[in-house]
Length: 413
Image (tube, rainbow, N blue to C red; front, side, top):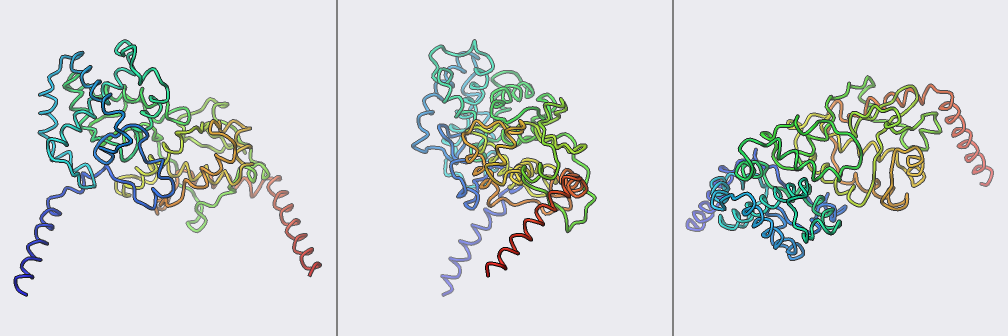
């Protein structure tokens, strides 16, 4: 019995030692939990390319591996950079880089370093070629077939498909020039900008420092973030978040829907305002990749605690929640499309309605005094609907309809 106890204790002490040496504060690249993944697994899965360890080696993603090697060879020849320098720079940080991943990486030092160098150099060479056409080979399939480029843009921003950003910075130092990270950020933004489902961004590339960025998805989140947090609502905590929700209900209550481009006052895609009876919303373009982009930005927000993100920094989650409240039926999609608030490239109104019906499932919202950056907008819309003549008429019409239904039911009984 004593021998068995000693064996168990020794085994547990070894495991506890591993826990003690793990730097949990550095974990920033996660696998999406099953509750979120099961709602729409495809949104979190790479289509053609694995970056980093979570999808490394998957059979369906092997098609891109020869292209990674070809881009590495192109980079080494064009820039005359030493492969040894690139490998040494990453190998020196190998144990530190592993700590960015929340999951255990089952790759030895050699395989892990090879993967990181190859993936990092591919990203850098890809964005260089995208922004500088003279660097491309005329027979490069990535730039000859639009569907490949479209899938690569999407795959690069997936939450599970990330490299630590210091990897890209270090490799770029050796490939281009030291401390030119603003140039790297500019190239990255140029490559992924087609993904964004609207116009206007919170910050310009030269306003963002790469020093505190953990990975590309976080960089995009910083880029898209509205610059100023909104004012807090004045309504009581018990009424927070109530909204005359759908587009059809809003129009019935006298609210006018307009796209912000008409007023030429777009600060950011997320700058939704209510002024003098008009709800101004920047146009949201919805296409095949939109759901995946929004879901992965929302996943990023889900994995950061309230100490890391302030309430207004959950802006993607709150934006999607706001749009979901506007869309309660395919008819609401048509109303928003008619007023230019939505550009629907996805298909019929039913597809857009279904997307927003599902996208909030298994999503947790921050439990703070001002949990949504659109609470002030909702408060002003509510006040307008409660006091406007059309709002009173709409409520009276609903009340009369309800009375009629009840009366007819009683008579039929």
